[in-house]
Length: 59
Image (cartoon, rainbow, N blue to C red; front, side, top):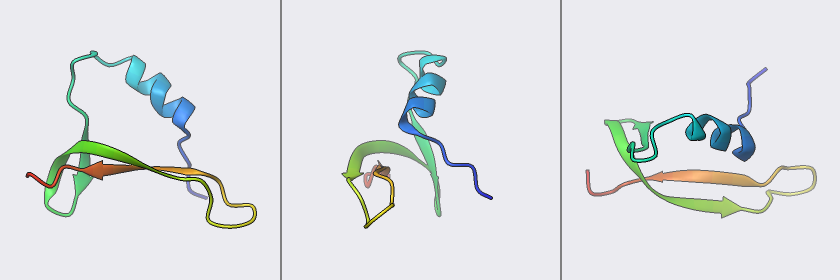
């Protein structure tokens, strides 16, 4: 079973990091800066809301 990270868990983990650290995410081409967020309220009955981290398209 996959472990799902919630927004609260992500914030707790990020609070342990230096405030000026750059947030990166793994993409097909390597690492990219996180440039924006998208919020999806739900995908249907019983589906949780989701926050999607969007990579920078400048890299």
